[in-house]
Length: 463
Image (cartoon, rainbow, N blue to C red; front, side):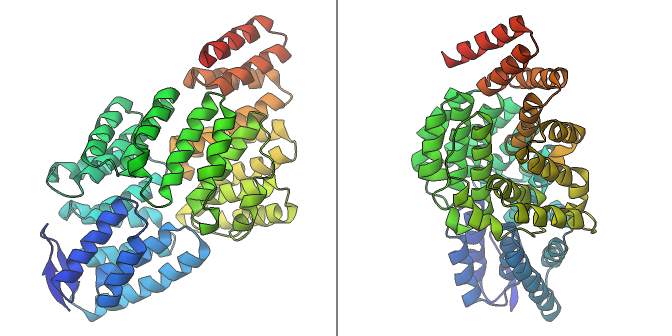
């Protein structure tokens, strides 16, 4: 094992230049969310089993699966990486990557992100550190950190670099999550022009259109580029999910259900957590619009039962709980609630998130399925402004705010529900769902004039 340098001037401990070139292909595949990442990395490790960064990437990718079994695998890989660091003359950058994997495996995601940010100070072209720090900030629910992490390194990049468009797309998403929608769309469109197969950049613009209520434009945007982004791995189902959200907001429920069946739920058996997140959040939204989803929840239950006691990301665990609560599995619900309470008492970063918001959301999910609407609505209102801490995007977290609005509308306190739903339509004036809920609550309160105004708004949005 010797020191080799890639085309960016970054040093690697490896057996040859070919290993470094293969590693860069893995980084590009990771940026592109391609389904051949695992094959590329496996081929590299077979050829160069002691390459430090290849082993480290294997541990990182295991952690991104978010489940207990893969977390155990990452822990073992971390121990191997530490042994390789001791055995060979590793670079300072490789040592920091090893520390990041060690911290992540121990549940210290904040320290992990700090390791990656430290790497990027001296190595701003380190694509793996860029993409993974983006992941870490995403699951801390902090759009500003996503934005600023890319802003710090972007001046070191130029259009000639093969990963430049991917970095622009990450910047676009950070801007969108920071509510800088115009800039987000500008950078996202530029990234997509560079590489229309860059699903993350297509997705960044899709988020802008969702947050601005531009639903017809969103459908057109996703559709027009489908021939390109549909080539990626399971992340493509998340873009179909975005199209479902546009149809949902337009009250085109048959279109949303059709896409759910053909695309969103089509590879549930793979066990990729984002597929369950997409499916569960969409089904719950549809039920809140009084749509009969049939037995579709049952199709998610087997996968969810394999994750009752995960301790990686509370954001993901909450979606598994939504499934268990929706199929009426009381034993699984009790197990998950007990587990989340225990989880909230340990010392990992996600335990702190459980204490801040995760446990309250979990309890509210179960209360709603048991008909305790007023109790759930007040519980969610109490932690509403801490919900971002669970991570995910604003569009993904919105389902948990919708739980609050819907529970309030079904609860006993009409003044409370009117206030919340007035808040909702102010923030999302193009949401048919929000205006319908407000109309129902106003009519229940005897405020017929306000109900008719809300009905008129619904009619105008349906034109």
